Length: 412
Ligand code: NIG
Ligand code: FE
Image (cartoon, rainbow, N blue to C red; front, side):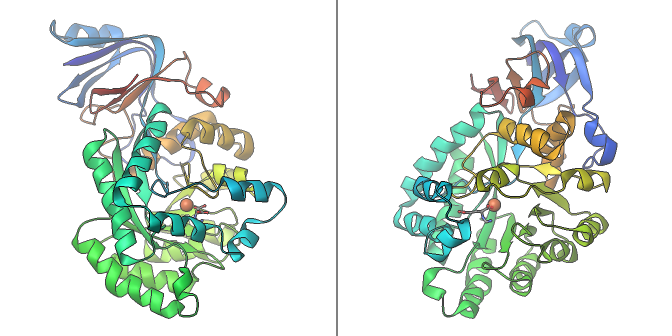
């Protein structure tokens, strides 16, 4: 038995067993002066100290939170963790005024990372991703969705997905793999897009589904990447194979990506910087969760999505880092919370909901993680502050003091 006591705020997120919408996103179910009992890696009891402490057995291992804040581990529902190299060179070019699309048109962008990732061995990619996974842990993230998409051959996509599997098996973090073969058309298929789509649908997807290497399939639905029709073909094939769906939609233009996500019954539609009224209504009607990625809008100096409207329309909003080498080189959910608050006027409570319980549901993990409730996995973080709002107030600092996954201390 493990017992955590003396928590100034135990931010439990207890509530209905479904994603939170509208005013529910502001209800964090905070227990002041709280305590929590953990048995066999799962939460057994949560409440006020005076209610919980009598149930602590004498041989229990005690954790004194020292009057600090305790939250569920963050769930980062959109990352591109596995890649080789950086794109610091392109970052400098963009600062000098050259646009992301211009750099991509010159052979940079996603394709530059694809070249480096193809050249890397599985072991090299694993070592890089494992090191980065520690950056996430230090910032309070305990579960990550990770997309492939920098391989773009059957062998290189499988290599990336095997790295994600190995991360799951050998690090304390929890990883959910997503196949993003439809990230961009690789150089060698420039003149024969249709052949690349055939390869994706007829070769890559069946192999990945058969080996159980991905839980979701994603596509980059955007001018210059994949059209609505092409994305529909890829995602429909994935759906027939039993994969869940996510979609990069409307990042640079309102191209009907949100409507496509709704039509296909995707779990999420991600980015949505340019999604308009029709897209928002479609997401609402189909219960698709928006995954908003303010760090990439920040890095690109681009438009932010209309997050407040989405919350007011009753969408179960999720916030994530979009960690990737091109548009969002940050592993920090607290940084994302700061951006969501200052740039999109999302309240701090809404932002916590969007990075815990709502993110968990978007990955099909709502019954297991995302809140501190009896029966759930004991994934929680003690932060070096006395009020949860400080997580979005201070920025550029790592406030996580101790991180526990499955009741085990994995960072301090
Ligand atoms: O989510 N939009 C597409 N994919 C990434 C960017 C990837 C890259 O530039 O390497 C994103 O922002
Ligand atoms: Fe992305």
